[in-house]
Image (cartoon, rainbow, N blue to C red):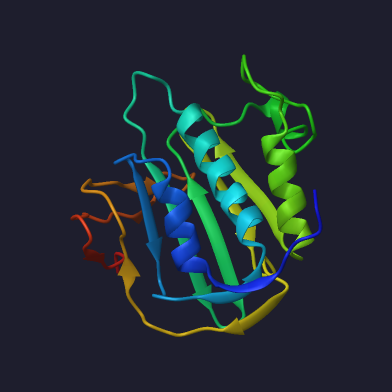
Length: 193
């Protein structure tokens, strides 16, 4: 990968733009802040989002309605990007190899996506991890030091939705509801208490 071209960007705006590339009503984007400013490589960030969302969509079997959640959560010095799906999950055999270049479980593709995502996150001094349960889904999280230098954080405590009109329920791996937003186009949602 080329060296990151770091510029101050609004992480919320850029993530929304990347999610909107998909034109898919079953992808829900939320953020607990209206704006989160970081120095980052815009092109590489969009690639992270699009690779993870594409993988999430492809993990959902055709007989199931996809529920994909993309969430930014920022508090104090920590920002977490989470991408959740209700897909097939990652098999135990694949878990050790998931970030290796040229590893794929798909019939097409070169197996470069998650390796590239991991390299981009690490080049921005971040970490990426995931939790997965077979037949339940997978959540990928990029943590804390995603961006080398946090420059500003304008706090506005609302969860924003930028597109979609769908009800999604996201569960953690113990089947506990972690978010149940009812969305309306362009509306505001509040996380459950």
